[in-house]
Image (cartoon, rainbow, N blue to C red; front, side, top):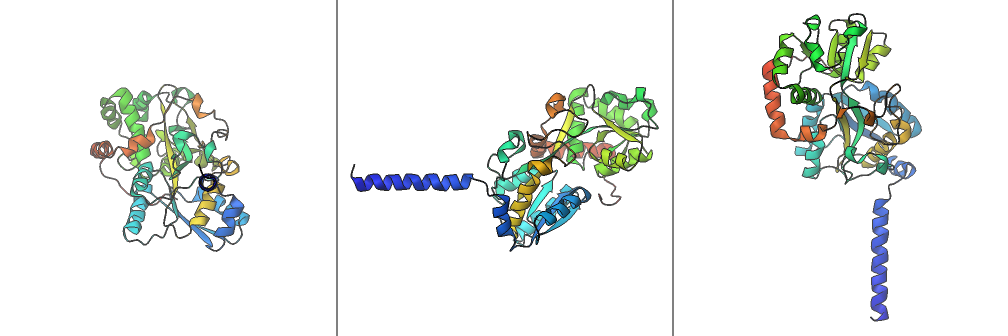
Length: 350
């Protein structure tokens, strides 16, 4: 082979290796900050209350002077439609979303509207909690456990399985989110039906349960004593308990504990892409993930205080696949709405 040809091949090989190496290396926070300063702000929509993010936003702004964080909270299945409308009109106002509706990110990836971005430390995120191409990643892993009012439910009466919620002592005093409205709650009911059959739903409804929008409202209701037990408890229970309410939580001793996730993704045409990359990189770093108050998607972050690693529990971890099955989801929503009646909106989620 002529020397000139060998040199050309060598240069081409080196260039390809260099480009792929550069693409594979995640930008540091300092590098992203240098670019983000000119953008000035990061805008994201949060499924659920804004309050859990406000302290993180404040810390981020102190860590990176000159950048502001704008958060819009609400129901994931409302905010996602707002984003879809912006995408349709080519007037994207938001940089990224943190939603419970994992199926949105699966759909947005297929549509090609998400930015392929792998922040520093991406390899520490458990494979089942991240997209292999970096289109989205799980920021929080939430367990749905039992919760009860400690003044109204004796220690010996704390439910151990879904069957215990059928007892007469809980008649009219049970509460969950509307399963037709909240995908995490729908997944919870689905796992129960998978184990106990559809007859369970009829028996549960015969116990005259109550329904509400938002898991924070579920926790508040149990804490106030308006209702006394739920199998639809989340990390909101701990927040309500910190306020002095007599409410506690427990993992089921007999049934799989459903997991649902909060997923994040940056939009390809985000108005402030570098600020969004910086925030997601910072938020997914081990330091921040260690204080989110729930299980982290990172394998190197310990579980919340008082809990064991997720691998120690009997869990149902098929949430993303479940919510991505659109025909099944529509059928289940319709069926459960037939049981609970239509959603009654009593306000926001703050």
